[in-house]
Length: 435
Image (cartoon, rainbow, N blue to C red; front, side, top):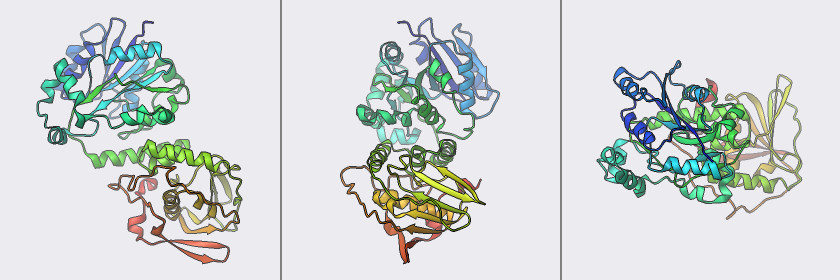
């Protein structure tokens, strides 16, 4: 089966874009095409691209929006004629035979979207040189032997490879669908609506696409589809901040536990797998639940159960009642939106770290937080059954509660008042919801 590729390359002032494009040209066949979307590069960089555009199988398009990566990739897909779309960023070099491996996978495997090892995802130039000791990496990337050497260096190894090697993780491959170098059948891309152009900041637009692709087909990991990220200067704090804001956009969009967890645990698929397993066990329990309380502007959080297999979060603002399939780990509401949050005691069936995150979020969005006692009295020993590494989130941006000792509990009749033990300045989340 002859598979044709439309290789969509994003470019913006990429110093080594010629290295990227030559690496692709060395591997394509006559049926393939390269579509370069340039995002307002300065003249010297754009002139480099114009040299390549003279080739018959290369189309150069000037972006009509600044900095919208989703829009730019969608423009490339609009002009694409190939069976498969391959998205490559202007700082990603395809290692030799990557395209051959990808062509064979799309021809003979059942998955219709693929990702592979991406080497040196995180390091900038100085970090890479310090940790690897490799100073001449540009020279190495210009030869087959050098590209092989650099892709095999243990410091540039893709830390996700062990995760992908476990077939039981396949349900969560979408969380690592990074479009630095990734493919999808064009028919599937069109079915799921392409990239969401509401993502105007850096990051997560590819994860969002992966989530929707996963609804139509399996995403596969291809161990021979190697690419290398050319080190460059980056603002890690700004990247993390924009990633969190975009994750909140996905939570507002989908309102499911997957995106609560993505925000609360900084995109750790192993934690997602643990939460999924917890949910599966919780769904076997028949538990009492809270339906309403006597209060204006309130929120109720019930635990996962046989009755609420997707989670249950109830809000009532100005007598308008809404229900959400959420656990309460992250909530799409502004701070102090509610007079009261009433939480079922049954959330204490969850592991303590999930309870801590739910309490932290409830204290953020509500003036007062209470635990409503129940008579179920069920608890589960989760030790050895779940994976929640200590300090599992990125604390550069926000403090994330991981211990119920962060809270005090004061009994008041049939309910328990929840108070933070730490100052509000520490406990509060970033004020992304206020924007």
